[in-house]
Amino acid sequence: MKNVTKIDQHSKPVYILAIETSCDETSVAIVENGKIIRSNVISSQIETHQRYGGVVPEVASRKHVESITWMLEEAVEKACVSLQELSAIAVTEGPGLIGALLVGVVAGKALACALDLPLIGVHHIAGHIYANQLVHELEYPLISLVVSGGHTELVLLEEPGKFRIIGRTRDDAAGEAYDKIARAMGLPYPGGPHVDRLAQEADSEIKLPRSWLEADSYDFSFSGLKSAVLNVVNQSKMRGEAVQTAQIAKGFQASVIDVLVEKAARAVREYGAKQLLLAGGVAANKGLRSALAERCEELNVPLLVPPHVLCTDNAAMIGAAAFLKWDKQEFDSMELKAEPQLKLEEW
Image (cartoon, rainbow, N blue to C red):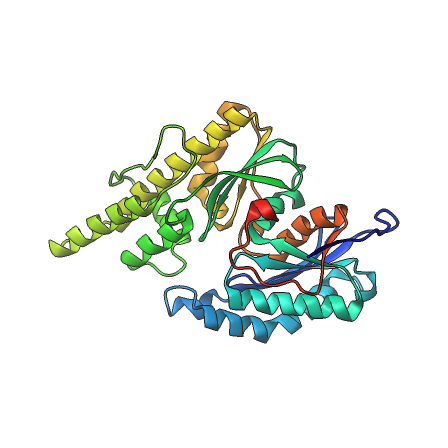
């Protein structure tokens, strides 16, 4: 339930304390006026989950519980902002792992209640998109290509905070496909950075298929590509040959990038976008960044990409997106729930 509350928005800086616990990073940040990072502390669980080859939801939830209190304390201390100076509390309400989300939501509600501050529930993907606002000035209309472990989407924004998904994955997200083929080739978790590195180093590639779907579709599909990689790996093992890991990585990455870049470029042209934003964990991929930059130069459209620390899950991006709600004075009640299937267009 949304509440609209009138507060003087211009008398002093707006300090939003933001909490992000949607998956396997516990993060707390304080963001000033939706653009200036006063603090952004992150506790990653990657080492914990590496032994399992992927994120274990129950383990992730327990780790959030262990670290959330001292993360809150550290964020406030590093920001040099007192609790009395805070303007609102923001927290990721979804999508994500239900247990992990609940830790952040409960912490955010408790803090908002204790300090008598407005509460703002934030969509995780809106956060990834608006991470760009922390380092760039946004111009509308714009297209955002969101690429992460759980999401691959093309999003049109005709004005601030108005999201329209024009394309999405029909099966595996790109980041998910990276991790799955990396595991098949015996690479450590998370697999994306290792596949990217091998692709950059390889001097040849194993050609793999591209899934373009219908001619006018902006949707994505990577399950067929994943199956093609698994087939190559299994055939090599059956013949007793060494798996050509680097060459497979280069072919796989080339296929993913070709589809992402072409569809993003077509969307930019069709909708007259003034900017193309890259968002999500896979935005850190060097091959994707390079290919998109080259294509955007041809289109004469700026490519905006956040620095690596703002590509992966972090609370500063949640604070940036929360400012959209602050600006409209739209706040949530203490009935706010964790919503693992929260829809971006309804946020």
